[in-house]
Amino acid sequence: MDWAHLSAALAEELADLPAGALVVVYEAGKETGRFRFAQFAQDEDRLSAEIVTNGFLVPEVRATPDGEELIRRAGWRAPEVREGHDIWWYSLPWPSPPDRYRELAEMVVTALRDGYGASGQSPWAYDAWNERQGNSPLELPRLRLPRGNRP
Image (tube, rainbow, N blue to C red; front, side, top):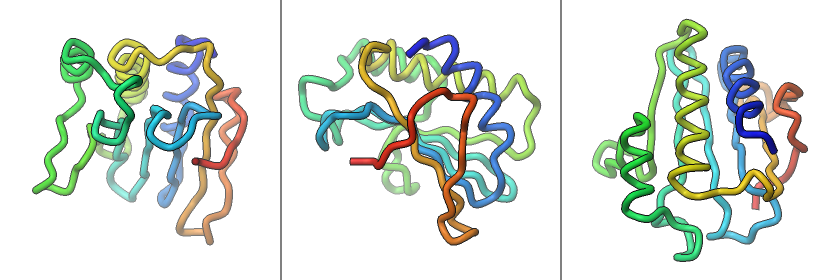
């Protein structure tokens, strides 16, 4: 996977999501506790984004303290369990200008690639569906990733 392509394509796909859309981009072929992921939920007025935290990962794939600092500096908000966020999170008002989606997509790449050390050589996949339309699948062809079934 090419990280620059993922960033550009993800920004375009996120800007076009309908209300009710749920999207997960993740390391495929990894057992639970070993795959790093980003997930998104589109509501009528907000796009919510989340990145996995170390608490959900086995030690070998966790971010180092320096990696966590990179994630924080990229703009991700730290988990706030009392606020309902148990993983890194960020949100955008909807609609937002295209540059905001590009910034968010770059935040995702920075977190996965630089913060967690995820490799573009690992297999990556996505799942996307619209919960307001009977969980009907959504196609995100610009990602050029295979659809999968989350572990």
